[in-house]
Length: 148
Image 1 (cartoon, rainbow, N blue to C red):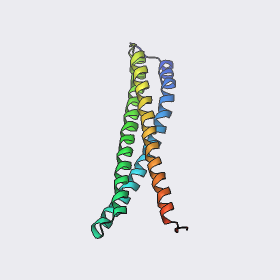
Image 2 (image 1 turned 30 degrees about the vertical axis):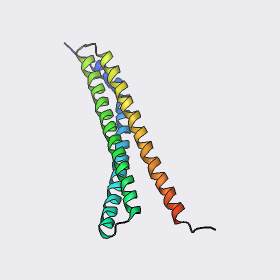
Image 3 (image 1 turned 90 degrees about the vertical axis):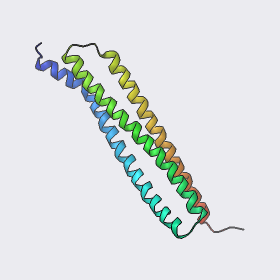
Image 4 (image 1 turned 180 degrees about the horizontal axis):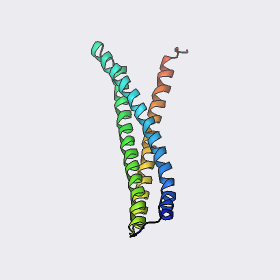
């Protein structure tokens, strides 16, 4: 089997779109990991405060931090799975074209599953943001002086 340079160029052209998608997923992972780090930092502060004073407000906020961390962890898992599937799509594009294998259905299937994982990651991220925003609104409302 003899592979032409033009064939390799064609394969690279096919792989460019998934590579850009992979870059976006990597950026999204960076955002998710930074949010998780902030949640972990706040959780440690709350846990330390609970050791000093058993306060229901700290307990409630800590519970919200645990919910948020679970959502972010699931979003990270989905984004990572998406990235892995995109890498497999790129590999299958090269393997299929180089070895003249019919991998079209597998490529399509893996791409659809990657998109479902990406969608799931965005939904989980949105849910985490909603919890954070609700908590911020409640803290703001609780900090306002009572108006009679």
